[in-house]
Image (cartoon, rainbow, N blue to C red; front, side):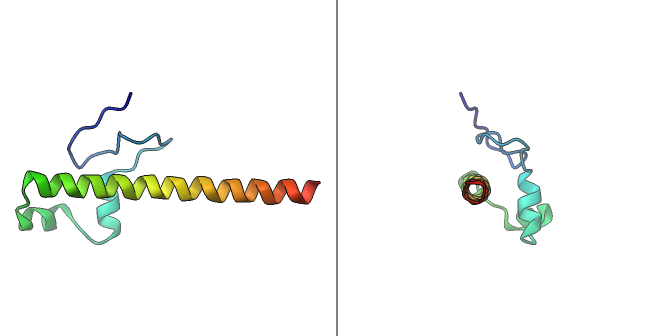
Length: 80
């Protein structure tokens, strides 16, 4: 089972080998903790950010796996 908690810490609802910090993702896009505090966001708005980052990580993981499958297929085709 997956446990989902609402905080901007580590993504725990996806099966990743190395969980990514939500702050790392936000900082990558130039958004800091201070920036979010200035906006004085509601619980619902913070939860929406949480869910969007979660989807971002799921998409990233999916694309990484897809790239690996393509590489394996290409390798297998070259061996045959």
